[in-house]
Image 1: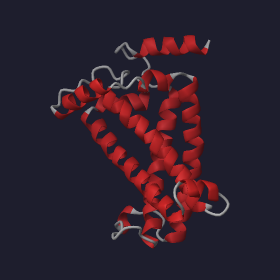
Image 2: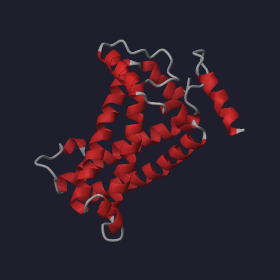
Image 3: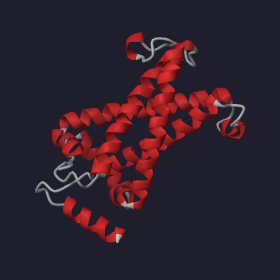
Amino acid sequence: MATSAAVASSSQAKHPDGRVIHPLWVRVTHWINALAMIVMIGSGWQIYNASPIFNFEFPEQATIGGWLAGGIMWHFAAMWLLVANGFVYLVLGLSTGRFKRKLLPIRPREVIADIKAALTFRLSHEDLSVYNSVQRILYLGVILAAIVIVLSGLSIWKPVQLQELTLIFGGYDNARIVHFLAMSAIAAFLVIHVVLAILVPKSLRAMVIGR
């Protein structure tokens, strides 16, 4: 039953006549994830500034929370929102077959061809229901980065209670570095995502109204 519905939905998405490209659950979880990520990054920068890993700090204007305790409160609030919403997104993405249809397969030859097309501004965006190879890699990468940032964040938050998890990351200090790198990857993805939405405005419209 679910498979038939998924196939029908996929078939409808291929027609550029106003039919649904992104179902409601995709749009809702997308915008909640975006909000949670922005709050987590801004509050994370506030926390980072209290004890920098590297020899620099983030501008105060780009942080959220005002001070360490405020940053921590915002960070935890956004973290649980991200975890709950991300769980719903993953379950629905897997159970409906959307991930398989949209993100697989990834073929090296197609990736190289799409990268060349993107660099020469010849990458087609006519059919928004089909992700090119570059998009597939980026989306899979940000999903992986989100999982890593949550797990490394938990190991930093409870290094004693979750010491086995902390050890997987090589200890508390290394977990902080992994957490920072995952955050950096997500922030870079958000920048690319926003730029592409500006360059292809109909993609933004589709994520708002679904069509």
